[in-house]
Image (cartoon, rainbow, N blue to C red):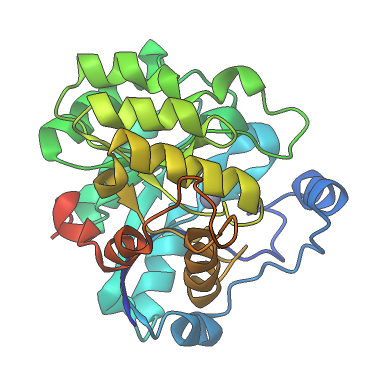
Length: 288
Ligand SMILES: [Zn+2]
């Protein structure tokens, strides 16, 4: 089966210390056990995405934790990729960069980027900060969605204070037509994401990078099912940390968790996860 859209894909040169600095790589290795081999190879990338129709790509802009993938790199990657036609670039913004709106306008107006990636915790900002007002206003007016990393990470200096998904509610109320996607269901605060996407019509959530913790994911899927918000869930991987095929297999496994024959415990309905794989995220987010 094909996947209609992966809404969460990182591109970078992991060997370039300008893109990802040494401390980030070291903490990733120390905390998560990853060896830091996260490079995105142009040809491998095309093979990994053979089975996916549309792919939202971005780098990551958060100087506070040593992430600084130039948007020019994303633009060049899309231009030189043999599957460039299915790639939808989002511009990485660090709101502490001087004149960050110039960067936004260059990417959107000159290069045709179709959305924004923000990383509040990594970049050490509060998503409710007035510093973001010009960006939110422009994205709402121009119909550009914002994918926001919410939830925790491994970086020691990234404040948990800026991790909770419900921080997006005042933003949604102030900019009611702004489309936002909570990344990773805001783990481990998935319960906040579920209630947020239930009451805010223009907030969605992606399911990227959650299958590493199957019990938590099972419970989050149960919560989403019980609150009736599964139609607001979008497929995402967090590539290159995980691959699309692998994510699909793991998500299907979670849906089939069972308490055994004769159990009267509630269970997940695997059918709606198939809908997540087929979901037309591109139309939903106005990316066409
Ligand atoms: Zn990510």
